[in-house]
Amino acid sequence: MPEATERFNHDEPSWTVRQRTFAQFTEKFHDRPDLWCPAPPGAREALLATDGDRYFAPRFGGRAWIGIRLDHGPDWVQVAEHVQDAYLLMAPRRLADRLDEPG
Image 1 (cartoon, rainbow, N blue to C red):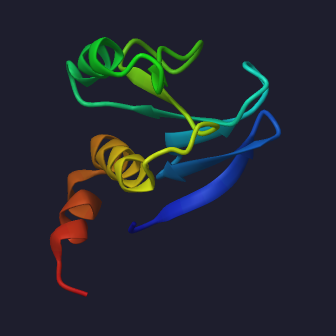
Image 2: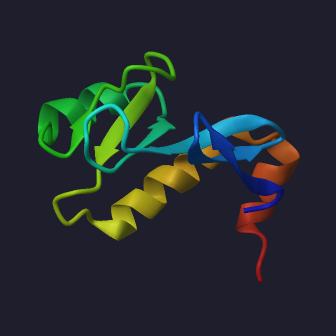
């Protein structure tokens, strides 16, 4: 992902683009590994309604953020899609458009 960087936030890894966080790993709040990221409008409510065992509303990040449990055999393809969607929400348009470029 263009210009994505990893940094530590509250002693846990997070990923940013132009200093805007698009994914946060955490084990602090639920004593299990979770990934938090922003989601497109309406996605959080839909995910919570359809798969409340895998998704949850995280404590921080805002009303549009989702939490993804990583302790029960997550679907890594879905996790990657959520991270890409989050990147696209947070990245400037010029960088987001580069994801569609070949190579």
